[in-house]
Image 1 (spheres, rainbow, N blue to C red):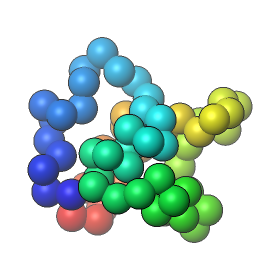
Image 2 (spheres, one colour; image 1 turned 45 degrees about the vertical axis):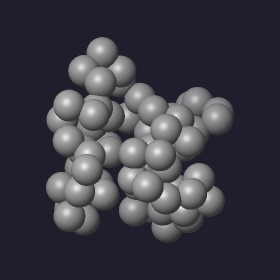
Image 3 (tube, one colour; image 1 turned 120 degrees about the vertical axis):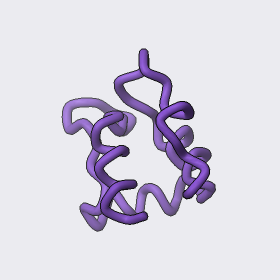
Length: 65
């Protein structure tokens, strides 16, 4: 997780797919779905498939690094 920085989060992107977040965190998509199920990471409610907002990913990283 330490490899994620402001540079790796594209400034023009506002949300990421589960696969993209999994790749950034170095985990599987299943792990990201577990984080979502446990409400440790939140996604946009109105969008399917899940989209994780950039600000939410930044919050998650701040709280868990």
